[in-house]
Picture 1 (cartoon, rainbow, N blue to C red):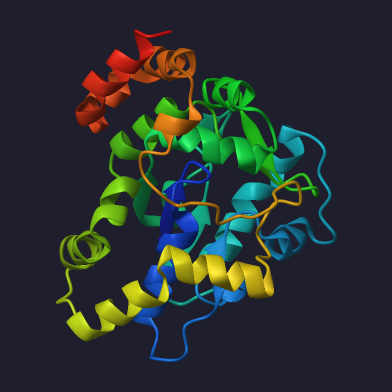
Picture 2: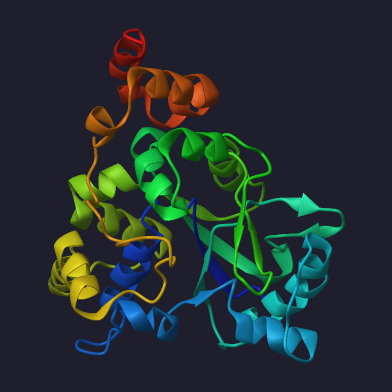
Length: 289
């Protein structure tokens, strides 16, 4: 049997920069002028919620209603995704690195490595609220819920769980070659963040002109303008726009002191590990509740 350890997971909690990373990689690795636009990213990357792979794995039209039904088909669908290209390739996921019963959601037998993108939960909460079409307190509830779930109308599920468990699972999974990026660092210096990814993870020399073109083509403003002109196929129907602000620090104007305190209390150990520079200011804001 051929080795199916071909998937390089592009993993994140929703609204953490996954679409941006997929577009950056496409514009960097594909020949000039051939990178797909935002509505055709599946020509470069695959997703683990692709219905066509679930249809093929199910031997007909897949329509699930329960987690058990999804778990019966997911391993075969992932094998088909892994085998859909002859070499390593990128697959988007929002799933946690869980084992549910006897099923690994991120099976070692199809996994080569992972790129994990995280976003601080204070800025994530307002964006996640828009994504979920809910108010901020409900979004924080869902980010703090170990049973938080997303998915498609066909019953292809995405166990998100808690934000901190999601981060910890992906950044500490044993035996998984990985590269971790913070969304805030990508915003602050996209070129530097991508150079680190290319040199340290892919172990390739950086083509500076190609990287500069990729960064320019995938700026937040460029993606926002594209959505305004053409729409964005991956936008949930409840959302007005997918690309809203794309900034760091929006939590200062969006969250109440009480909401800042809730997020700190829920996620403090992981904040101490990954966002120590935010601890002092958020503590001061939360103290005003």
